[in-house]
Length: 115
Length: 113
Image (cartoon, rainbow over all chains, first blue to last red; front, side):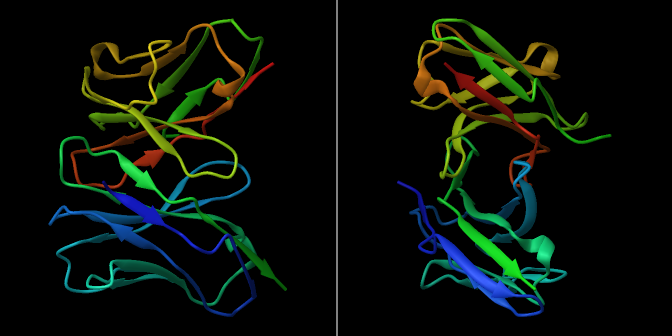
């Protein structure tokens, strides 16, 4: 069975600091995708970054980068130069390669950025 | 606005009543998903459609739940005989193809009294 584990219920960081949000996954699929979403208090899920299991390079999108360590089955999100607007819930998710392409989400990490 | 839209945004109902939610995906997206999110948890998959065909249903989707996507455009999710345990945020997402990211709507928050 596929599973996503996020072990940090909450993280606190000051503006302009970098922060790493942890995510480990479990799957037997040789091909899979890993996603990070941001959910502000408004409730909308905002797509941040994607990493394919066969991608050689770590994904980057602006201030977001994904530290993909396949052997360790980890896909940590790194946010550089945190901003107050980054305060939100962050979810790691995985898409497998078997029938059905639903995303499997972790329980999320709440990030609080202070000035 | 070309994003995913959901209606209503909030619904309060009494136990035992039926409710129906609507989702309008991004127009060119052929895949549509429904998820449920309870407080403090990540979204959980309910069902998805490719065009008008419902291809998979989660075990979470009891026989009180039914979803449709007529003509492969908007989708509706109906819950019959609501229970307090149905209180949650119901999220709709759409995507184009299999591998691409899913774009989520703002959700419908259901409260069953």
